[in-house]
Length: 247
Image (cartoon, rainbow, N blue to C red; front, side):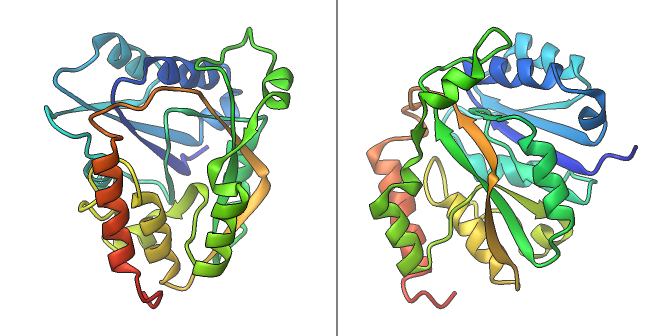
């Protein structure tokens, strides 16, 4: 069976998230692993050899980008975009784990939805690590609604035309046409909404599907990626781009 979907994973110092992802991926039925490719890009002062070994062990592609400064996620994603040879791709966050069969269902829905950018939802879980020993039903029962689905944020999305969705599944050719991610977003904040906005400006409609649920693992924010200064700078840039809501 031919690979259909590439996961581009940009990574720095999220070991528990990585091992949760690794446990999930190695437990997959061969059918899904056979249609999913992984491009894993680590960016730090030096590579993490133990992670590189595990990535290569599962047949994924590992790349290292030297970076002593702020984590530049958008540049890493564009690096990955240039390497993608599948019809579909997803910028996959290492702190998310698909619940049940969400990733496979996500791909199947996207393949049937020519005019939609299909995205899911996330549940915020208390655990930093999820493996086969965990009771996922208990984890889901104890989870919380994500910030973007809280009343104030949801109202802003509905009234201000800000688009948000978890793990949008893009058509590679269409994403390449718009030039990929805007690398003026450095660190955390705004880059995910921006890429959805620009992609949908090409005639697509955002479709959030409640059947697609991803568990967001608990973790601390890296200070070189997520700080008030970095977040505010990215948010200000985002709002400057779309201040008239006509882009």
